[in-house]
Image (cartoon, one colour):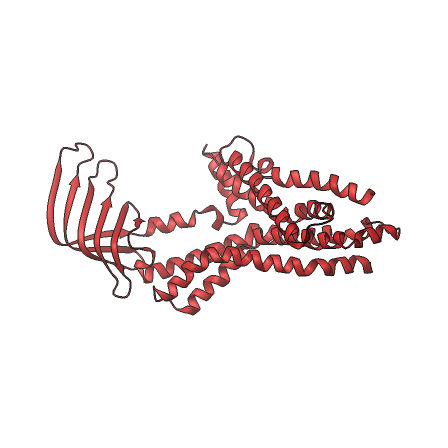
Length: 361
């Protein structure tokens, strides 16, 4: 028991280091956008801090398995390099009596990730998205970047300049796609701004020209100049669309949706893939422990940097297999749950073989 705890204490520092490191890497992807909200968009720092607090837990299904693998590779790599594992064998102590604590730890993490991935993470994703949409409605130009196209419903908006402080855009090009027999419009305007409320956006354009194209007969073209032109954009459809994002829906709700869609004869591959992915990621920590310990002890020399690099290689291969399984599931080539367990299954099988050989040495 004491040796198990000693080995486990050696494992914890690299585990926590990996957890913080990988969490920061994922946060970095969002951090620039969130800091931009403070510096250039005028959003309160407290609001952005709330969004950061909401975002960090959404990375746990990815960062925890990777941290567990990194902890195994670094700690057991060092123990192997310093011949501590050899010393344990020489003392006649079975490695099985020492290593049991690591699969147990990983299994506890996996057991906690199941309800987190299926219930809590969707709620946090929904809360994060809701907070961002509230900011976007209070300041409609938050999503608009200069010299980049921005879509709202059937509108494509391009602004050469965006003045967030004065809530104005300059040198605009707007393309409105007509639905069915409705005409499409191309609009050029010198200036414009967006007003919003809970129900709609108003795109107000000044000093411009409008070209209206007939979708049925392209030869018909209406060309007019205007001093002011207003486009009303209702938001209720967007809200419904946002609520349908699968990652924001709990697993229980997704299963009900799957049953309803199957009764109506609709395909449910994407919904089933989302459910299967949540369970597969939950058991990734257990899979990584099984393969990480024997893999780390097989390298007698190399040091911490080498073992860290090897852990990244394993992570890359694992997620490559996971993406392969996800693609097969979403296209309906194979059932969702077996496809998404290809990566875990490969780690389980290879890990059990390597771990068995390690214990029997």
